[in-house]
Length: 349
Ligand code: MRU
Image 1 (spheres, rainbow, N blue to C red):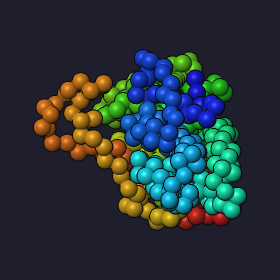
Image 2: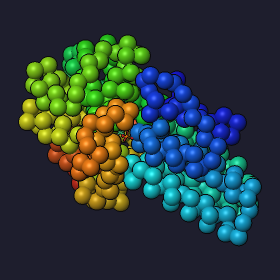
Image 3: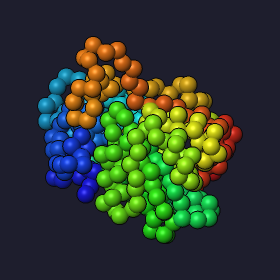
Image 4: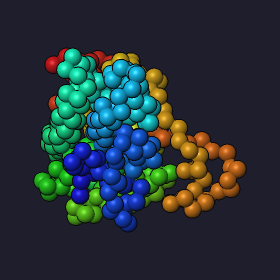
């Protein structure tokens, strides 16, 4: 089951709003289709959003070629990229992929719009294929690191940082998959992850499909689970990591990090290098996406759980301070005890 597929000039996205009950692919013929899919979380997870956005740029370039118009091709493409970028403001992989695409477009500008479109398609496919390899490398580094804990592990994860959030085996779930392959997973506790239940609908589904032992818990069971179930480590993904290691991830990760600190459970982040935003010094500069209030007022599939006029706060992400993170696993190696020194040093090599 592919998270996304590029076939004959159309992007097919596995509609994650329908999982785990229906496996339906959403054909995206235009960049607006992709933008809509990103906004409603039909495709979600930082790396997958980046890959989808790269294909959206190809669709946009194709349509600009067909329509022509007064605005210069690259100016129009840049405006579309800005619009796409705004679809999910926290996940920096989106911005990263769009930047890669625009750099590529500018490099080939002199060849004309048709040629640029062809090169952009090659670039999007390259970004897609690279994500698969990046996940595999991260999985190995992460498993080598967690293997040092020295026993079959009881793990806890939050949201979905799996194959469904990437083009490959996943970030945090990629590490878990590799540990399982080595016979080192005794149980994975998956937080259901309110309000949109990525843990219940996606992580539990993914792990069960791979016969990896998983137990679903509601988010408010996490502290008790850590305390009573012998959890050896927490491993999650990330949406943006600042230069000092402060990490934005799905809302609830910060709370988990506080519990982990209190209970001396190590917290690991698994994220590709493209999730780092070295232009910001710390997590206070990470934009936090706020989503529609009805997501909180309702339970699964829009069934009302509160009165429609109930006031709501719905931040989609929070920031875990670097002090609460044992290590960040990337495709290039591990950053132990991330901080304002170790992260920049890692990127110098
Ligand atoms: O809102 P979502 O479902 O896109 O949030 C996803 C997460 O927070 C993931 O943990 C993160 O993107 C890492 S994905 C490998």
